[in-house]
Each structure stands twice: as C-alpha cells, then as structure tokens.
Length: 174
Image (cartoon, rainbow, N blue to C red; front, top):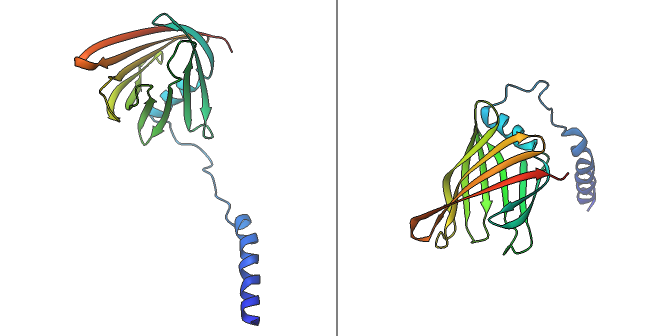
C-alpha cells in the first residue's frame, strides 16, 4: 500500500513538473523563405472584408489568418447564394496549397505559385475529393491591384466537360 502511495505521489509530481521542463526551443533566426512561403505571406496581406459581384450576385468575402498564422480561411457569403463555401490555403513542404470546400459537395485541392512581380497568385488543380458530377473548380487566379482592390478569376468544369469562367472585382471594406 505504501509503495502505491509513493508511486501516486511521484506520478503527480512528474505531471506537475514535466510541462515546465519540456519547453521547446524555437529557432533563433529564421532561414530563407521558400517561394511557397513568400506566396503565402502575400496572401496574408489580403486579410480583411471585401465586397464585389460574382455572376450578378452581391458577394462578401472574408479573408483571415487562422491556426496561429498557419492557414488562411476565405469565406464567401451573400444573399441568394445556396451556401457559403470556404477555401483554406496553407503551406505544405515547398508547396502553396489551397482546398476549396465547394457548395456542390466536392473539395478540389490546388497548388499555387506567385508571379515574379508578386501581383498574381495562380492555383491549378492537383486533385479532388468527392463527386464531380455537378462540376468542379479547377483554376483560380488572384490579382492584387493595390491594398484595397483585388480580382479573382475562377474556372469551373461543368457537367459535359463544359468550361465556365467567373470574374469578381473586390473592394476592401475593412
């Protein structure tokens, strides 16, 4: 019985002491950023609230950093929309990735790159999860005009292998 009491005391003491003793050291100086990280940092400059019109529908777009700055959440809302699709962007290894959670029920994943002048972010289809029966988004180009304006060109593949391009001019509201 006494051994059990001592064991409980030791485990309790270790539980209290371990978190203070397990501090993780952070790198003192960051290394050079990859092209994917540079593009991701450029995307972060779009954080805020935006207003525009997409295919005749007034659309609000909210862009924000999340997950301690490791992901960017983009949400489109507006009256007359069937739903509010979201898009997540993140860096994985040396690639800038984007996953679009589409209101048609699939999740296209795209890989992106930034133009040499730093004004365009272009994403191309990598793969897709879920049914493509109702179509899928397969290409996005974000063009940063200035701190208060950007455009998005989105290409969809519709049923019957037809292509549809949509353009939205966005103005920052916050």
